[in-house]
Every structure is written in structure tokens, then in C-alpha cells.
Length: 419
Image 1 (cartoon, rainbow, N blue to C red):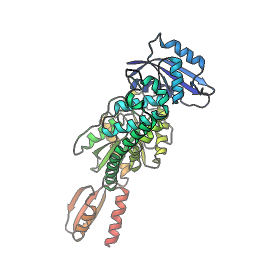
Image 2 (cartoon, rainbow, N blue to C red):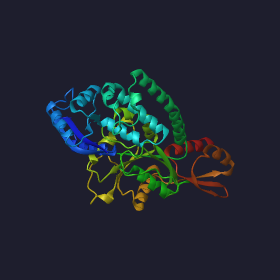
Image 3 (tube, helix red, strand yellow):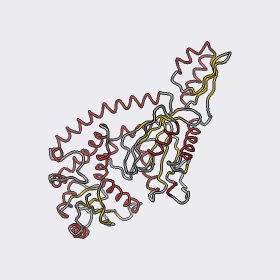
Image 4 (tube, rainbow, N blue to C red):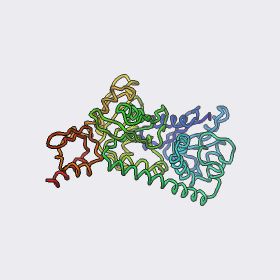
């Protein structure tokens, strides 16, 4: 495990949540399998264009490297290629910035082909304008934080070669994106509403999904990974679930967020994130035990705005109540329909399912009678609906189902046409 100095640099009067962001930065470094040995902080009037921090602070950090056997110095701000080169020459060790740490974690977490390609594309987009800065330490032997993903040979080639590689990855991803769009379109046109889980990384989204999936008893039980570590979920996962009243729906787990998410990440994962836009309901999961709860909220709301999803009905799940002493007050209008839960408690998951049902179907089940003479046309048009009871009576059949607003509108149009 590499030994790291974590440097937090910020301009006075221009940065909020410094304490929370510093804690998050340290957590990110640790998630990248490195040990933060020393933390250094500097408030600046203005970032130094050559080295970010002042020359005096550079000298102070250099004096710490040899006595503490430091392998790398990580900065909380994004560095240019020239800054990386200048700092490496001044400090004599590997220099990594926050964006590179995040991309390094992604490279280590990606499990399927599409996820690996998305991460590789993000890494190349980030590293392309920084080739000068990276050449010096990537030419060395050895691995560690910041060296996962594209190897030395790839990053030592010229810009045109890297650009060609990026185009090849984009072409490889286009097929997967086309398949996802087709599947997403089928879900939107199908009978089942989609409920998307969003929130900060490690807030408990996957645990909530697994609980709802198990509670509803889908056709096949398949949990998503819910290990207690940052960015455990990189790929969008869909699972079938059933509400207490019998209606089926689809749960969608998404990649977790962090503050100041790198542009390279947004661009590489854009098509995956855009699936949120088509959800019928959003479950915003918050880690209620975290000291960075306000940062979590701000980050997630910013992402919803970026995705133009702020108007989708939303429920807020303040998770991990088993780790806190009391349900403190969160007076924030951005958090509608709040529920305090522990995703590990079945009773709490049942409360979530009941709330989902009331929000998806505020009017409850929809019941209507179809004369036998009209049933053939009715079933031809609405065979995909999720009827949970059908009773055959003397005059016709009595159908009962939970319908989304769009399905209800289609049904009412059919009824008007048949009159």
C-alpha cells in the first residue's frame, strides 16, 4: 500500500464545505488502496499557476517525503500537465490529483466490458492534455495509485495515437449504448413503472434495492453488490420487484456521486446517467450517519439539475438510522417525502415499498369492466398491462390493475373510442 501526503489547497472566501470535502478527499485516496500518512492544508489568496501551492509549502512538503517514506503526493484540485511536471521536479515523487484518484478507483471497480471501456475513455480524455506531466513518472517501473487502466506504452504514444484509441472506444461503446437505448425504450413503453435510486456513493442505494427486490419476490432473485466501499456500483442495474398491493415495477440502481464530479466522468457515463431521466419515480438515498450530509444533498441535487431530472417525482430516504442516536431535523425543501430508514431492517423496507406504491398509484388500483364482445380488441391493445386480478362475470370480465398516468390515459382514450 502506497504512503501518501494529501494536500488540500483552496482559495480564501471561494470555497464552501472545506472540512467535509477534505474528509471526502481522504476517503477517496483510501478507496484507491493508498494510506494517507500526512494531511496538509493551505488557504491561498490565489492558486499558484506553476505549483498550485506556494513555494514555502512546497519546501515544507519536500522535507516530509524522505523521513516518512512517502510514495506520492495527492492534491485535492485538478492539476494541469505543467503543474504535475513542476511539482514532481520540485518534490521528487509521484504527483496525483483528485480527478486521477477517482478515475483510478473506477478502473479498479469496473467489472463488465462496457464499464471498463467507459472508464478507459474517461482516463484517456483526462490524460490527453497532460501527457507532458505524466511522461516522467509513467516511464518508471512499478504500479500503485494513478497507474491503473491504460498502461505506459499507450500513454507514451503521441496525441494522434491516443485520439485514435478514443475513437475506437467510442465505436465499441456505441453498440452497447444502442442496446441500452432499445431496452430503455421497451421499459418506457412497457407496463411497468421504473423507480431509480440515486445518491452519494456508499449511501446504501444497492442495499435498498436488494431489500425491495427481495421483499417483492421477483421472478428471479438476483442481488446487486452492496459492499461497504466507495463506487461499488458503476454499471446501471435493473431488478424486478412487486409492491404490497401486487403491482410489479422495475428498480434501477445507478452509479454513486461525489462532489465536484470530474467532467471526464460525466462525458464517459452520460448515456448511463441519462436513464434516470426516464424514471417514473426517484429514490434519493442519503447516508444519515455521515458528517457530510449537506455536501451529499448539494451534490445530488446538482446532478439532477445537470440531467434535467429535477421535476421527476422524488422520495428521500435518509438511511443508516441504526448508526445514529436520533432523527435530527433536516429543514430542506429539496428533500420531499422523507423517510428515516435502516435499509437492513425489513420493516423499514416495507415502509419504503408502501410509500412507493402510494406515490406511483395515488388513486390505488384501477378497476374496469369489459363486455365479452370487446375483449378481443381490448386484450390486443393492452395485453402488456400487468393485471393482477381478472374476474369473469355474466356480462363480461372485470380487470384490476395498477396503472401509471400514461397507461390510464391510453385506456380512457380506448373507452371513448368504443362508445
